[in-house]
Length: 379
Image 1 (cartoon, helix red, strand yellow):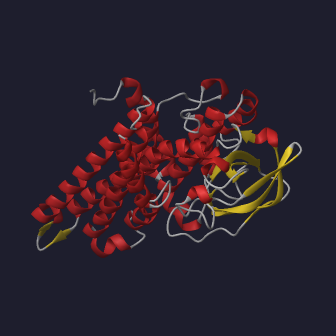
Image 2 (spheres, rainbow, N blue to C red; image 1 turned 60 degrees about the vertical axis):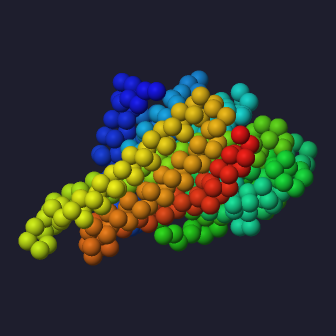
Image 3 (tube, rainbow, N blue to C red; image 1 turned 90 degrees about the vertical axis):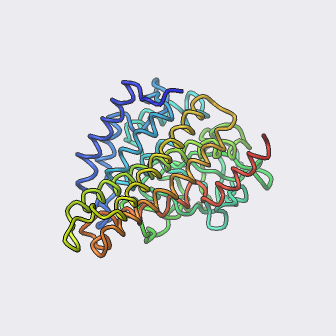
């Protein structure tokens, strides 16, 4: 069981780390404060192959593994959590088209998506269907060579800015078997967007409702067969959970490194904070929790790569464990800064705010426990 990265993986990791240090970290606070969605910077990331990480090469993808993606997202998130997380969402949407779309669909959208000339959003959650995703109500009624959509999606990252919306809609019976996957393109008649939500974190990416009012979408935009949408969504979320867990690692690592620097600079009671055993023990626990979380993310990613039947369970375990631990690490790092950690002069308060949603999206951590318990009963 090798725990060492290959030479190629170390190079991928370094490339992402260098990009994050040079193009993300210096601007993350400004993007957060001014709610700037850094599309030009994301296109620079795409030029490095980070917008189609596990998309096939014939349409511009990098054809890397899920473990490679985890390495990339940890590094990007250490620079800017919100930007890394959005690139993760874009990758998930693009992968769905690549994995389940026909050749015409793949060649229509993916060359521009992998370059981020087009930007993608993923639309599953609705105002009345969050954790109970299979109860979604957005209706798609067949009318000749098109579907007519009515309904709304909630909490959609990129809403109003993205060019492509990979949407789960109801074309049939109640429950998961009645869900299909449609690509809705920006500019479609009957497509509109709600106001930009005022969020605690992830402030640099727009989030709003996506609204369908007799919105006509060509049948040719359906990904897979009718009734396959929920399966597509759940398979996408396995990888999405690894990615958001990896983003959690990067932000937690940045918080830990900031805390390590600070405790050697700050003096109280005549000595450095780093000299107090209580501080040393706190940092030791933070580092241990981070390492354990990373191992779980890597293990889940490797399981997904080899199509292990336990992959869904391992992805849920890793996402729950990593996002919970990352939030605690960032909060502990803030605490070590005392009152200064509460100020925007330091990045800790942003790390805490950005990480909080990682325990909610891609399935809440409570739903992760539901999935784990269900998968355990099947073994």
